[in-house]
Image (cartoon, rainbow, N blue to C red):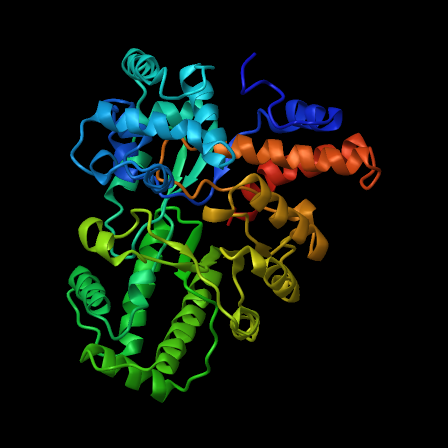
Length: 467
């Protein structure tokens, strides 16, 4: 019997009915991911399974390191076959980790392989997967279409040309791929990276930004540029939620110090970050975009390997911080004071902050636009896109808000094979709701349950991100 059976993770009869009748065949609205638009535009043909499955996947890299695999066979110059063997030998040790489930979902969905990957059969599976890639011409666009994806929101820097999005739009590829505005480069005042961002921004328009307002005007032009190309959302990565009041004079002084690479205090950094987030939120409100904030990651902790491999290579973890509730509520309140709070999704990486975020966003749902769940408690992400992480998030959301209005899952991934994570989420959701029904906590009302499952799996996101 296949491990990934039709009732995988569905442990009660109601869950099975809900998943197969309502969730399974819904399209995927993937509103936040890190897929490379150039690879989509060129309809890239993958060389082998190592390229498509292991390149850039820091989830797998962390597991391989924990399994004693030398870095040469992870990010180094070892052959594709050697790297695949090292991953296969690790895969059987990931039992209990969501990677075990994701690996076998991907084997089943894209390669029709039911075998459990391990050290005894890695070579046979390697050959089967590579043959499938060649025979079926598994390109980026084919994988997206085969996954029943309707919309993709990529993650793009403000100074990106978006030329590949233009190419996708002009092609006959009928899945909507929209850029998302990620202005994190504008945040690190006092660092060279901030000046490098300003240089790139100024070069686009041939004008210097000598004041904060002049920089903001150039960013507004980029927001307009993105909006013309179909952007529906922005995204921002913060270590913690912050709120610090400032005057216009203080912001101008901080900006001047940043231009001269002078030392900027912690308070000044928080004043600047608060101001630019609030100013950006007004731009997003005008465009009808959703503003996403992901917080709670502490990055590049292994300095030895950061110096050798750079960022996003598997050395990040959860950050604990003590003032997120005050920062979250203060920031949202400031944005809302002129009644110009945009649609907002807040994602926390530290699961101990679930109640803080869920109760905080509930303070700012009021709106005259008829938007259901205008401020969302976002899905479990990164270290929380596990079965337990997703369940914790859904239960806390239901405790403090309306599960019925939840915009559901996102891939947050760089992999074109990651779409079974939506299936994983849908199975977990259906099983959770089924358990509540069969224990008598939710009514066994088919119309109500159908609405709940279909809304969370697809329709809420489709409606929420519509301008």
